[in-house]
Length: 313
Ligand code: MLT
Picture 1 (cartoon, rainbow, N blue to C red):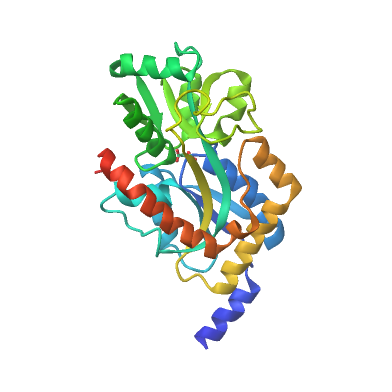
Picture 2 (cartoon, rainbow, N blue to C red):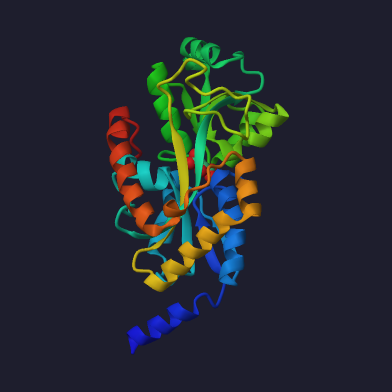
């Protein structure tokens, strides 16, 4: 009877709003992607997708909460390269395993990384930036969204390439970090493009390069790291939807279908593309793809981050 009731519930799903946990502050890249995608998913599901920001510990607080939620489809989460790729290497006591504790739903957006600084930072291009940071590292502050976040992982890579260790300021997301970059309280950061396009266009921050092989249509004047003389700095992040492990297959399928429809919708696509987001191809929007991708990401990041020595307490 329990199984039958479960199946009937899965068929009727969803009969009430679905909470999507965003493990970072409101207004930042993961939040923005979740709101854009969630809005269209709610049209397909016929129920509201409510964003709940549960920030802290580089996104691992919110993902831990999501992993432990009831596996009934009413709590899902937007994870990313940090929470589901970098975190295992950096948190010895991490209370979830990205590769086994979730039902992957699908990739939501690729997010190239930009190197940005406060607007009066005394460097006008990436070569000058590298020279200045090397010479002045001891007096500079770099911002990130907590150990294991995308901004932390990617600034760790940049520090290693430049051979520097500036002071770090940890935020509950790069939304608030960006506010402090705009007001000049911190000097620079590496962050996902979707958080930055508007400020770069407005000239309230400086952008030096995009760490991808080709330029972004959202910021066509911004050189790639290769063009700007730092070809070894190549990194792009991703955000993806997950449900807790053991969420019924029918519900996972409905969520993947709603994500797929959102990413096929012209209005949703335009909003993501205008912010520099990269829209996943059809097969990348499936749980099967995302499950394999997460395994590959954990395997890719673990040796890099262990070697960096940037372990959390
Ligand atoms: C955020 O939404 O604040 C980011 O995804 C943080 C990060 O991982 O750098």
